[in-house]
Length: 375
Image (cartoon, rainbow, N blue to C red):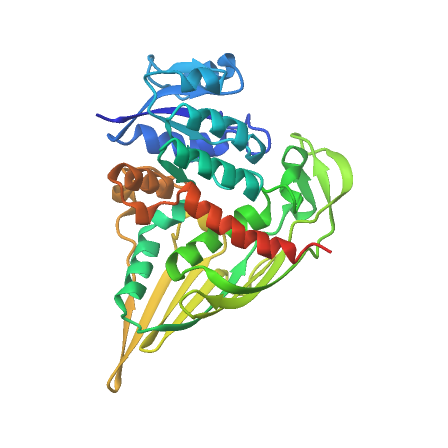
């Protein structure tokens, strides 16, 4: 029997404000309706009318129910799992209702606008024996799975050090949507640190382990930006920006690995490479390179090389991501990796998806980086 899903936050292209509902239709909707393991039985938006419009626009099954209240959705006996894909400031209220109804939950990252909220939701889910999945979907990317497996197999020996040179997409070229102004605020919980950087950072600690010693430097070189409305008209000039555009980290991981991560925000990179990740072991080295772009959309275009030192020869292997269309059930970009996380959750493959508990660990470490921004 498929898992019956109620989706909170299903937008219509061109109608979302500040990201509202976009990821719901771009990633969650195709992931759910393309899978035989799931069945979309309900949509919940800010009003019943809004939910009905989304159901009609996306041509969903006539039996799909429309709700304007998560309380009503949570009481629906035909819903086994509630997916929350809305702006971060609404996570706490909606998730508490879902968890207390003892429905399983899929919460979009950053899983609450503060770490205290994430901790509260984590405890609540544990108390109510609710299964959780968090939208850090890169744990399900086939290339990342293979990277983790190769390291754990000992192919390059004991990992002694790792270094990352990463890339922040430059914000707005001088202007930014007023409806998404929260992204410019370092304390909002939904910004370049907790979204853009965090998606890579969660992958990093999933593959290699978390930090036991951390020395961060974070800085916002760009201080202001103009805010514009939906028509591109400037509504506020020189709006303050405090979210970091440069992050430097040095530290030691739990297994003793020395680690260095540097993210910067140039107009473009010199060679089009957005991420260069090197992992050095006693028996060899791995290098992952990937073009500019949001890490969370998947490793399309990425190249991974492994050199293993054996006797007098050096062998090089290139990674293959496989048939992404087949692995995702035909879900197109940018939702293909999200589809794989749904598949992993249904199969109980807990090493391929994040939970509230693992998300909380990631946020605790991110908080230490944020502290470097504060006076």
